[in-house]
Image (tube, rainbow, N blue to C red; front, top):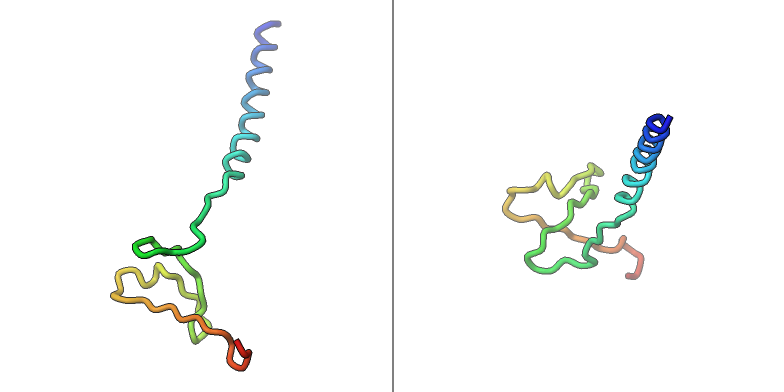
Length: 78
């Protein structure tokens, strides 16, 4: 009888651990820097090019230079 009770407690503890540990790990947020400084690794951006094709920064890995140009939409006054 005690053996069955012990096994039941062990199984219950394993089930609780299985449910709570991944949740606790998932809740830890990886804080990314707010700004890039010289020498920092840039995050893998996903942006659309002039033809509307989605491009990632990884696609250009190994190329000599990558220029990202951001500007407000024409005629917005900004």
